[in-house]
Image 1: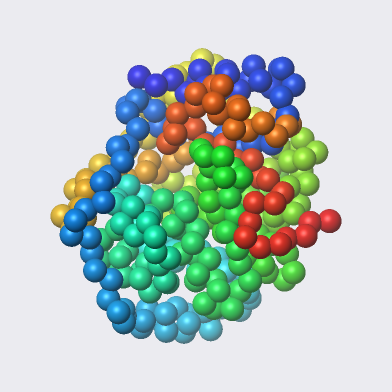
Image 2: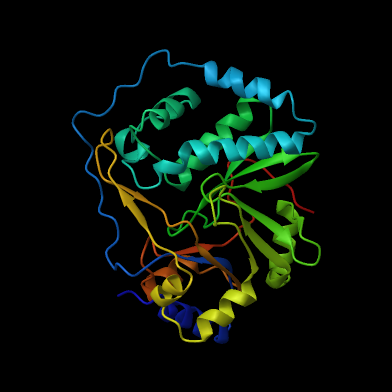
Length: 303
């Protein structure tokens, strides 16, 4: 049985040693200590239609016209993307099927709606990015780990001259702890650099029953320090994986667990790759969110 508490203790030792990094650690379910196997590219991969149906875009357009503010529109598109890609977490990945092809918005939607292929965070971020561009919003992709592996991709979108993080994979929102107001991207970076990580709340509204959670990092840290194994914590919270068969997919679908514990912590530095290598952090179980300054395909100026 994998014990993520041991990983946390490794991180804590590095904290004490004065390592320098800004991270957010998302600890994933590790009772089954076998990471998902690589799925071989199938010989009979789904053929993408030359002219896929686009009526869904008109339906989205009509709905957006009923919303009063740009922020309402941005949030609506994020939730739409979350629902569309929800069952794609563990399916045959679009990047495995089409490794040398940049999929269009309609091609992604066709694969999702027909349960032919799914995406992980990178594909989900790209799909939302394309949606925002389609409806006139300035947007870009944001790599939380700076291309060092064990990372997470999110989408940034500009609303009223400020950039906001929009996550269509976990449906996360970052809030300011004192008043629960949403933090824009630049303000969040400033707080993290100042070591004020406990002033940030992570709000995960997955739009699914009993999965809405709101907490600050200190609460998770205290729970871990009570020497619970991660698996025991999952049992205590009555959180269980869902595994089911999708007859139209090339592989068994493994759905991501409905809750993920996020531990915002702070230690400074720039030796992220060495940190991963030295501590042998297993992929899929521990993700480090670095919030690097320049990790987008777009220039964002934060004062």
